[in-house]
Image (cartoon, rainbow, N blue to C red; front, side, top):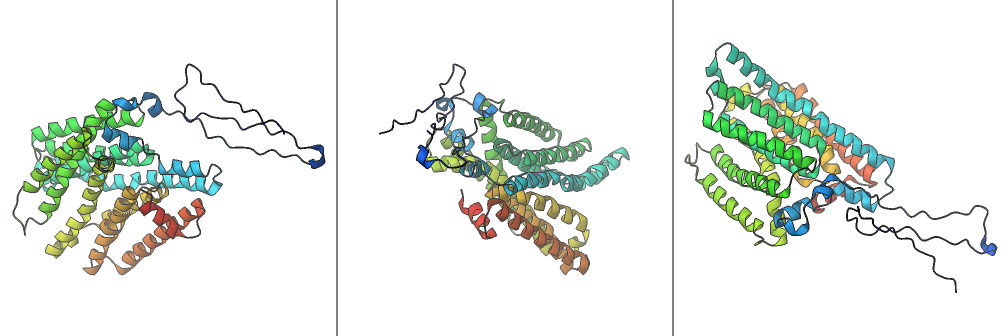
Length: 410
């Protein structure tokens, strides 16, 4: 009987970074007997998993020092990494669509910047001309709500290391804060609220930057996650209630009740009193509350259009088109990495905030038929192309499998 082929094991040095499992070299394959020789002898190559060591692994805390909430959220494997692990020899179409979808997400900065830039320029002109009263038309509470949503999504994407989405949300934070600063200069926003907002924005940008590069200790990041989770859960019900204030009494009760419940839930998650599924759910609440907050904005706009149809004439078709384009450009990346929350928010905003408001404007004859049907056909062609390219990248015969993975993968 032939002896078993020797197996070589790499012995970890004193400076090893806890690589697991042990990386084993493939066994040496002995040459076949002379009777079985062929013209060209081939050897099977066993692909080894890459030995990538990220800054997050180097700076991460030991498991016994990490809180239950952070351990369940930050240890999640990236969906694309799972695909690459299962299929180490992915074709060129997979990597090509990976790169293109990331570039599309980065290109979303252009329409989003154009959305906020006209308001910043107009506010600057009014301030320089001494027309401070014009800035009172911009609701600072609405701007503050959007700012909190951008900060929550920035923290979500910074933890996922999704660079293009991080840039988009950072641009949203900076541009929205610029408008808030102009409102404070015109005394349209109280000074104490502005100072508190400035501290939160500065802290959020610094902490997310450090966390993105893996330079932040978990003991510092955890309180920030708790803050944005509680803040998002408190703001969302209050905003939804305020939308129907003409029909319901004006009250802060929804926000106060949700704030109390959110504080209790987060405290239970941090103390380990929730199950593993419950802790994981709490860790994702900040991203979902921010997404639901942005998803509610077009509903509030349509409700306003329903109550006051004359206000539709004050809407800008170009603004709605930019909103549709910016969110539509992020759909390919969200689908590719199988991020259901990101995909839901982007698709909802693209169809409802962009196309939905354009539909209302078309119904009230404020835009031409050619403009409306042109944007409708363009949006449908774009969604069809995204679904087709994603299926081709993953080697699927039908785009429905991509949608199924997106919904049921988590």
